[in-house]
Image (cartoon, rainbow, N blue to C red; front, side, top):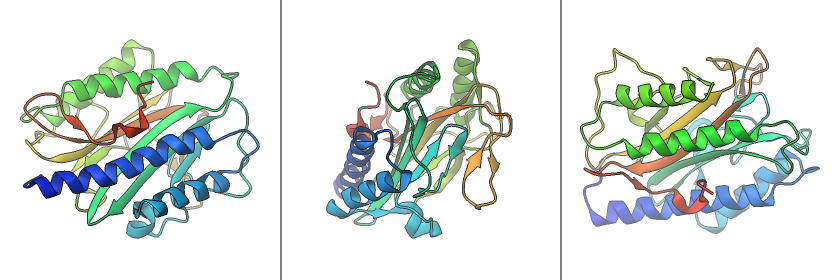
Length: 254
């Protein structure tokens, strides 16, 4: 969507704050020995307390309030009473929701407890690359150039990017135009970021794999070769300078 009024901006700020706070609090609530279902139910209660509704449930009938992916799972992990979090797990939480007709999306990977499997450099790279990408986004900038920047920054650090998971437009629904904001340079993509438009930009940074593959549950995406992937995502408003980060409440830069 494109923001056309102060009411639009205020509505987007409310839902973005809700998903940002939920993501931050879920990360702080997570601990070894907890199931991903317990963590998801906590997030669901937080969203409900702020009047927000889970976007994946509303849009796709997803069997959880949030998406929680662990270790080799890349995205869309289904919360489960049988999946117990362990010390050193690479955990990704993706929170998207609707409130008052406005939608926002926010995600982040982190290491649970001590970094006994050395995942933290990957997490740091994903977070830093998103920061770099966002600093280059302005009205009129080619989407392909930002994808190329993400890919180049990943290569500098010895990583790759997942090519079949992308950022997207958002605002009045979960997925809008532009439907794809890739993490790589697509020379066929001639679209540009538009002033006052709302988008969710994501970095999927991988230790080796370049594609995510679906499991038989119909939702979870994983790597076939045992690679690990860290993702970070913000909902932003495009301006003629650095974008307005709507979902900054989770403070993923720290």
